[in-house]
Length: 274
Image (cartoon, rainbow, N blue to C red):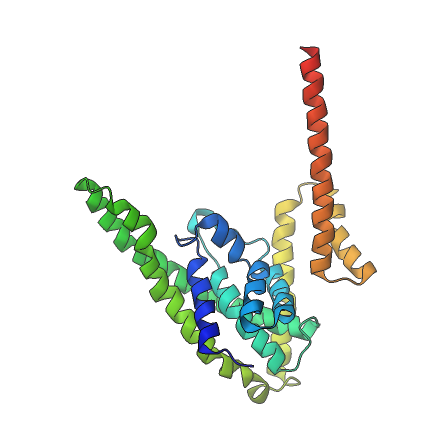
């Protein structure tokens, strides 16, 4: 499996449009389209293998499930993880003949995603640095009362930064990275120490993401019951984490309806008292 020029252009376009710095904006890009689980659907459509892409994206998503960016501090660039890491991971898993749902397949995918995410951090801060040029021009425009230039500064000129630092690198990496990944099984045999180490590290990385999430959402011991319910459900019913996520979404919806119903009854009771 290889990535042709048309597919690489589409992946590069998605990478340049899904950033926290401008483009499609924070809500639709950084917190939605750049997330591995969401991005895996689009990557799968582009590569023509949706099932493998989603399974790879789900494995990578666990590592970054609790990723936050306070004050613009970014430890991993998710657009690189999603639109460079997932395509290369799909090729690596299929090239190695691994089942993407297996422990080895998930470990290899997570390792590649983590590597690309670290490299992508350079892309993120490079884009932010280049945007300072447009910001300075914007301040000068304000001093000259040329307020129309503010729209260019905020919405148009940053696209140049995205093109040079996100579009071009993603295009080049996805095109030239596929042959490299395809040859992994020749350079590093699956039964060799290097690949076994890679699988082990990749398998452990999701535990880091889960631990970070656990630290954020658990405020009292009883919260652990809800937290581990999904894992117990997955083990008992033999479903994957995507299936467990749908169960969780349903439970969250029911809980929301119960809470809102209680709030409505309380509001009605208060009005009757008045």
